[in-house]
Image 1 (cartoon, helix red, strand yellow):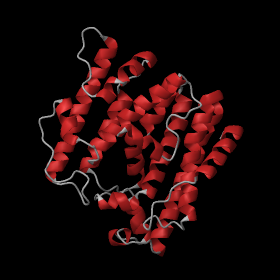
Image 2 (cartoon, rainbow, N blue to C red; image 1 turned 180 degrees about the vertical axis):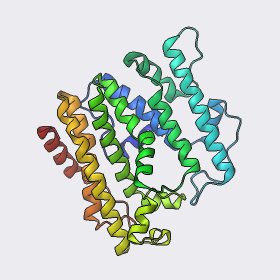
Image 3 (cartoon, helix red, strand yellow; image 1 turned 45 degrees about the vertical axis):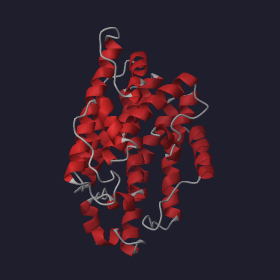
Length: 309
């Protein structure tokens, strides 16, 4: 199930200490984001069923969606058609929020769950559209020339989530949005570092090409069962960059109070704990995926909550 994947994230999606209404709203946003990612990655449990729900004419290829290696042209076409269908259903979400009596209801249940959230918090379509666009980019872009190019992708794939959290909490300001964007981009970069081997198995490399060249790392070395010295140096360099970005955004925690402060501390701590796991693995992210220790995450969250950064 799409929502079941929340427990596998580096950070708590909708922890128990939040008010029930907040938890429901955050899970609705998470459900949308996860659905869009699964559609873009070919990881839907029932792609044909999703296509029928959304009125997508394109049929899924006969081969398994999550096969190893880059997607076939037919698979890419199907994923893009699904993303188009999801964007059309997103239009129904906002039409239903504005004109509940006259509009066609969203067809997918995870998008129907967004309607009251959008209405309650006055959310705008842009963050949701950016998440869809990030997955369209994934169908056509498998390499990033520079670090700036990668951060540009993160503005589509990660930053909208933080902005939606701030909007749901009713605390959006330009200053907080800037700090949130830094945290979210950092979390996305960290996830890419954890998933180097998995991403490469699907034909994608999120490590900037300029950095591969700088450290003399070839794509063949990224496909090895364990990381050699040059790969470890590269990962350590990227991890340091992600930590710097996380440090830049962490003061966001100190700008809010109460349960929201604890939630944001948890998000931020998840990034630091994942970086610590990568370091503990000797920066070998090829042998196995470095996962954050839950006790370390909790301790870091408590420290960030107390200090406000």
